[in-house]
Length: 71
Length: 509
Image 1 (cartoon, rainbow over the protein chains, first blue to last red):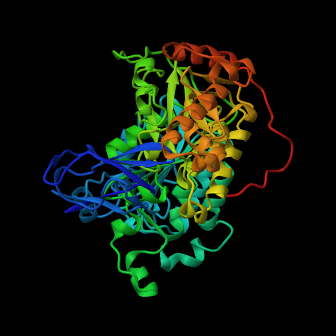
Image 2: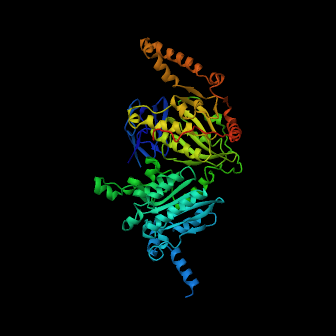
Image 3: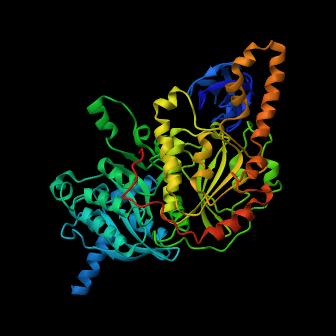
């Protein structure tokens, strides 16, 4: 199991996957909003989404887990 | 045995390096023998070898564990020192150190590039008095590196460990290429860390190639094999002159890669949407000419060498695809070193700005983002090579300054029609100026008010207004950007500038 983490502080703007979805390596899974910019966060791993750790609108710090991928 | 026979026998013995079992052990790790590395590195082998017989009275220390000499890369003579890890794990004795010092002195005298092929366990503790503390002890190697820095290109290829004091060899090189899985750099080994500070950690976590190329920034390029590392070094040096007095060689111009969409089609209209800056870079440089540096480290800023019409250019570009292209302490640091590298060796600089600014918040303030940002500004400001700034989309606040904005004497500051230059973006600005007013308004009127004010603000920072005020020098059709850059870089080539007279600046480090 691997975690996809926020690479900078910001708000969770959109979550583009749901629990159970298959994701590819480098696929965008979450879009943060920070510094007025859309910050796409890509999964570093291929697998399925086991658990969402955040909801849209949440504030996250750099390094906070966003979701868990089951490889 | 005739004396010729004896000589040949001795030569053969030394050329073999260390014991067979150490060769086998290296092979298992995918490591090449030092002489094989040199064969692959040079156009036609090591041409001149120095102190081949060093320590030859001791049969167990062929060449004293290091090969030094001169060979050609892309037709240019370069000096090399290469550790032989089959000889006492590439450790340094008195003569090893003396050989390294001498080849550095040669590089200084001839003003030609210096390469370090590092694969060494560090000092031979048994020889410490001879090789550690004195005038020509190992400290002199680093002293020489510092002296060579900026005079000739210095390249480090890390094939194995570079431990303790030895880790300063990569530290003082312009570029460090690390082989994944084998290369490592650390002051204290994991064993030492456990004994002294109680930390339990693996070698890979402590000082592995991947860590250094993505987290610490001590490594620049991560490669998967030694062959790849050697090939990278040859490609890298093709962008450089042999020393600071000369200009990079002009290579034959290549067409830009054919791509269906032009630049105008790939830049999103929405300033806040992400796009991949590599797609723009590929549309202005000669096909396949991009040599990226620190790809995995602070990827919100792209740094790399490229060619435009055959001419070497150093590119510093914000990457909106990563962290919105915002500058962080690490990306500012990365930029500062890269700008110094290009400026030292007469490589023109191209800044591609699409930046919301420097990151804010407690995390980066505590990390000293002001101090790190200042390094980037200083390096960019001091650079006297031809320097072009292109405002691709937004350039807000100190982001404009860091990307060679008009105040920092770029030879020109060009804007694409999508450019937006301001202290801050429309959303932030309206919020900053009218926060109280907005709060006072009835809920249903707020959105309309904000929209109106944002539109007014956008008019105020309109790109043609900035061109009319001569803040920017030209507005360019994005699909003609390459030709414009090629033309201007050629013209600015004649630039002769001294930044200012003094011993040296006193900036944050």
